[in-house]
Image 1 (cartoon, helix red, strand yellow):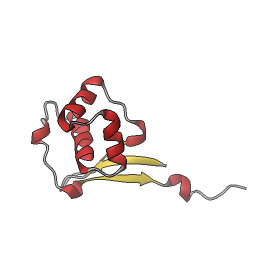
Image 2 (cartoon, helix red, strand yellow):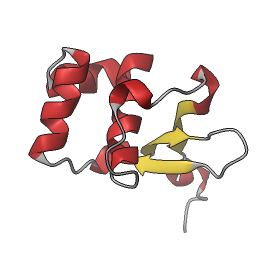
Image 3 (tube, rainbow, N blue to C red):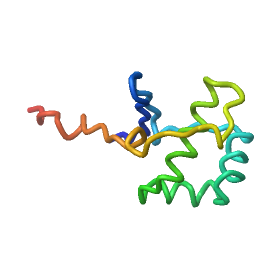
Image 4 (cartoon, rainbow, N blue to C red):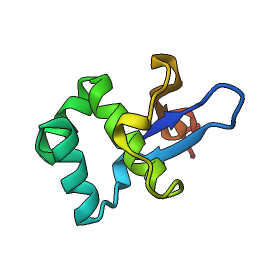
Length: 97
């Protein structure tokens, strides 16, 4: 089962990032830690617990890949626009004989 970070801004398509296969570059990790005051390990735990701060920070990092120069303080969104989705495809499959 895969878990995805989702961002659905009002009037736009949903963006999804696979949380089980996160590939971060060192400047991204440093930016995450600097902006949140948490280590990357702590941020992983916070995401598992549903911390909006952690979800917001990771969304910001992923969006910076598309919007060069996007500053943390400039990324403002509604709480309902960010979330976690699970892909339950393994559970939906019928057993094969």
